[in-house]
Structure formats: structure tokens, C-alpha cells
Amino acid sequence: MLESHGRKFNDYDLPTISEGFKNINSIPKLIMDELSISILDVDVNSVGNLNSDQLYAYKTVMEAIENEFLLRVGDGIELTLEGDLIKFPPTMLVPWESKESLSTLIDATFPKWVITCSIQVTWSQGL
Image 1 (spheres, one colour):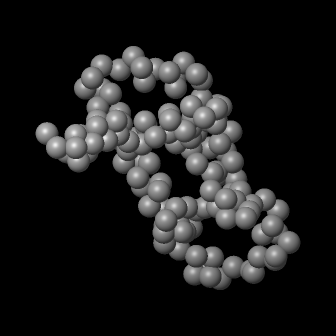
Image 2 (cartoon, rainbow, N blue to C red):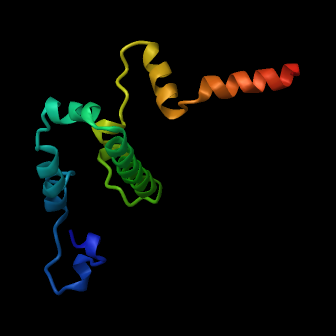
């Protein structure tokens, strides 16, 4: 909490925290509280009910949030779990169910992949 405001424990005249206390829980309580909030499926699925303007606004906001998250991970600011594991938000995950999951990931990452590939093939073969 202090770090989010640019402060450290050493900035204050506080007793030193013992090593045993530091290792009680590797995930801070604030994060555990946020993770304990259950999100109803109806709320998650409500994105499908947005009109085109609302969907554009939603995607713009979500893209900014996801980009910010990835920048924090790359800069080492995002908290990690033991073993330097990073817990990604569920909205950023593609579950592995079969080889089709890889296609789903590629389609989500590169939505115009097939069009781009076909244009490149056309150009390489000549018009």
C-alpha cells in the first residue's frame, strides 16, 4: 500500500519486520480481498449485450487496462507469486482445451491474420 504512494517502510520510524512475519503469506491481503470477490457469469456475459458504441468504449478501456498490466509486468512493478509467477486476470487467459485453443489465441491476438497472409501470398505470386 505504501509503495503505491511512493513510500517505503524505511521512510518512517517503525520497528523492523522479522523474516518470519514477512513469509506468512506471499500474497498481500488487499489482493486476496480483491480476488475473493466473485463475479457472476451474467455480468461477464453482459458484454455481448452492448451496442456497437458501448462495445467500442468497453474494448478501448479494457485494452488500456491490459496494456498497463503488461507494462507493469515488464517493468517488474506487478506483484509476483513465489517462483516469479505472475497471476494474469481471467479476462486475459485462453483456456487450453485442445489444439483449437491455439487457433483461438492466434485469432484473438491477430484478428486479420488470414487476410494478411492471403495478401502476402498474392503479392509474392504476382498479381
